[in-house]
Structures are given as structure tokens and as C-alpha cells.
Amino acid sequence: MRYAAGIEYDGSGFLGWQRLAEGETVQAAVEKALGFVVDHPLDVVCAGRTDSGVHARCQVVHFDTDAERTPYALRQGGNSRLPPGVSILWCQPVDPEFHARYAARARRYRYTVLNRRVRPAMLRHYLTWERHPLDADAMHRAAQALVGEHDFSAFRTVHCQAKHARRNVHEISVRRDGEHVVIDVQANAFLHHMVRNFVGSLLLVGRGEQPGAWVAEVLAGRDRTVAGPTAPSNGLVFLGPRYPRRWALPEDVAFDGD
Image 1 (cartoon, helix red, strand yellow):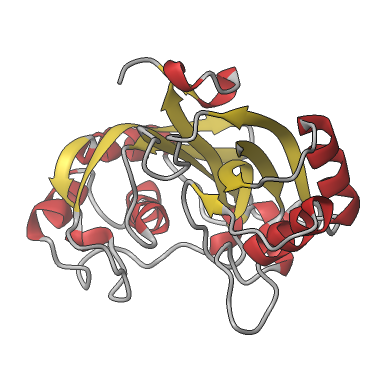
Image 2 (tube, rainbow, N blue to C red):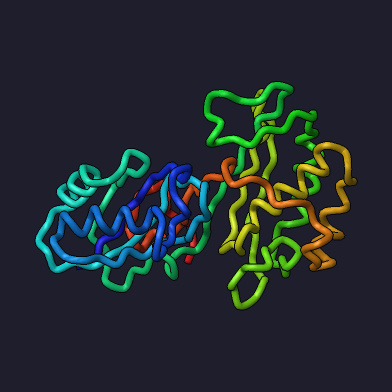
């Protein structure tokens, strides 16, 4: 039987999603917990790997098991064995053809900046602090140059292992919510550090250090050394992937279209 599960985690105490030879990772914690419940080793496949310090509101995974367990037992039993920073939100059987990564048609990220003169004390692991006033409207206008299918070489890390840099950004928005500036991005897929590099460049526009048209110039130039710095990881949350409704997954990860 193949199962899909939605997983929420605080990435602060982990070296990212992907299992490593040494160090705490989310994948290793999930595989250990669910493996205990089904009484055999598990290989858990995720929709999108996250870096060290990056959080997830609903990472989607799939795994296979011959053990006879109810979805409730998998969820509750798994949660009883997981560290406090990881929680299985839901678990359900799916078609054997479902693949958490390859079936996803979109992925969503949110980056939050606390924009005030005083550094944060509360929620500091989920925010990036910017003391200089930001023009969120200017950032939003500049960000629209990133919408569509482009070569995003200017916004990928040199360590990115993707075969090519073409991605399709469905939408990107920048809005102010009181003291917070929130950047939401949805794309078919992302390159390594792509969202954090978007944010690093948009912050230069928000501070008035670069004109709005500069983001389009950076994109067209395809030169990573010209773009802004990589924004810190702690402000980034993987909201989750989206799948065609034919897979019958929860509404929060449903996608209209094929």
C-alpha cells in the first residue's frame, strides 16, 4: 500500500530535509518514527527538499508499506515518536502511481521580513529582520518581472544540481502587513536558494538601493554575481506543493488543472 502524508516542521533544529550520513534531518526523523510504527525500514519521498533552517507548513511525502495499519494509527503513532519540531498533519492511502515529487504541479513558499527599527525577540526563528524602511509596493512591482517561464540562472546557487535553470513562476506577490513584509511565490519548481535569492534582490529595491527595473535586468543577464545576496533561511516557509484533484488529496494541496 502506498500512503501520502502532510508534514509540518520547524526547521530550526535540523540540517534540512534530506537524510545525511551525520546530523539531524527531517527525513531521518520521519523515517525512524514511521518505521517504528510499521516495524520495518521506510524510504520516505518528499515533494521538495528544504535547506537547513527552512520550515514547512505542509511538506507532502509518500511511502510504501505492507504493514496493516490504519491512516489514524500511522499518523498518531508516528507523531508519538517524532521530536516536538515535526508533526504529521494527515495521512491517507493513495494510488500506487502517486509520487510526491513528480505528481506535484506547483510549489509555494512564503518569506516574512520583520521591518522595524528594533530586532525581534519573539518568533525570531521564523522571521528575517530588516531595520531600514521597505517600500513593499516597489518590491511587488519589481517582482512581477519574475513571473513566467525564464532562465533563472541569476537566482540559483553555484551548488544547485538542477540540470537546467528554466522554471515557471506562476505568481509572486509582496505585501505589507503592519510591521511585516510578506513575499509569496508559487512556481512549478524551484532552484536551490531561488526564493532566498529573489528576496535578497527585492530587499535592495525595497531599501531604494536599486530601481525597480533592475530586477528584470538581473534576470535577463543570468549572472548570479550581479543579483542581490541570499536572504537568511529562517524567514522562509515551504507552504507546500499542489497536486491535480484526481489524486484526492486534502484541499490545501489541491491544484486546479493537470
